[in-house]
Image (spheres, rainbow, N blue to C red):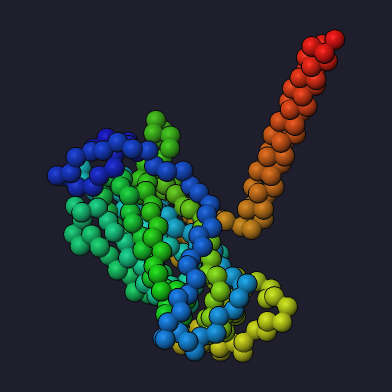
Length: 275
């Protein structure tokens, strides 16, 4: 197989399909409100409250160099992690990664954090990622799609076994009208963003956080690949938003000047026709 980012299939018996990899994106995904059911009557909902969980999903791929062969040119890892590498297990129960059908067991289920899997292959393809949440969080799963990227954007340059290809997307999962039980359980968890509550709404008593020494760590702060993770800081997001707002305001000012000019020309035409 040629070292080209346009190849989107994996496996020796699969045809090649051309298609560019999507550009990294920043999103804000709002989940549906909890459904009213007999099972959840005891969960009091908090009106006008939203809980958000910043996540990053993507892949890191290393070229195998001299160890590469026709069917295994790269080792790659696809994952869903906290935006600041915190433990997502407080919200996400399991993640399902749907690989290309040429892989053995293409449906991979990861039952605990870190939510990731590693494989070897030669081609790029779209990976469907389905996140399932704990019962007090949300009934509906969240579907994400990531285009596995193995080859650098500059295809003419030499490939390196030491510097990987990294493609990540930022998203904020927003849970409107959470239950008091959900808020009480996660309000002291660093992976979860809890906003200021509306007037008259008090925080429920927090659920004690389990001693980290007594459980498996699910964060990715000391992950072997963490040095390659993209830093999606709030300051960077605010800067991008401010830049975009400034561009919009510039366009609005330009359109207003054009409208004023057109209106002035129209008035001149009317005054001439009235004489």
